[in-house]
Image (tube, rainbow, N blue to C red; front, side):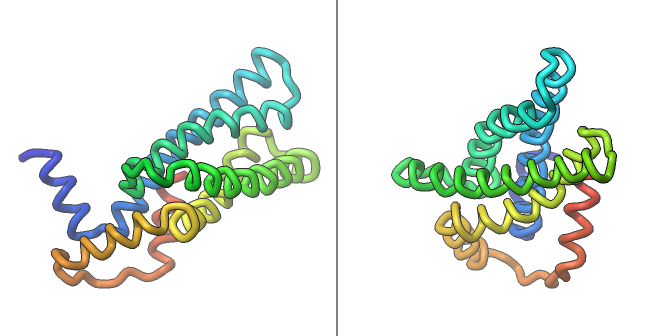
Length: 173
């Protein structure tokens, strides 16, 4: 039993599911960075939670871009990295606006603890980000990997959209 061989076999036979799995792991890592920085800045340095949230989001950007590009979407090219980083930044900035608005509404109006509010907001942001990264930022890498996988892939049963939604919710929760 070799874990690398198993991982490659699963990645080849179920490329979409494995990309979602890698997205969730990469996003979970970036979320851990986000929550850690948010907590430290807010509790240790007594910075207002909304300001802390912006810095936390910036730190998680670096982690997320690197992991999403190289691992989730398997894009090791360097020739378009500046364009991808710019598009990624645009997606992140849009997500930051949505995240900050949701965080404010959940804390100030729903009276949730800021970490709980951030977690809930993060689930919404995860959906937006996955499809934006796949269709806007790393579309060429995704297209090439899907074409490569379809040549060697044994046809598999299609999963419903609901199954993907449940996978996201269970993996994040």
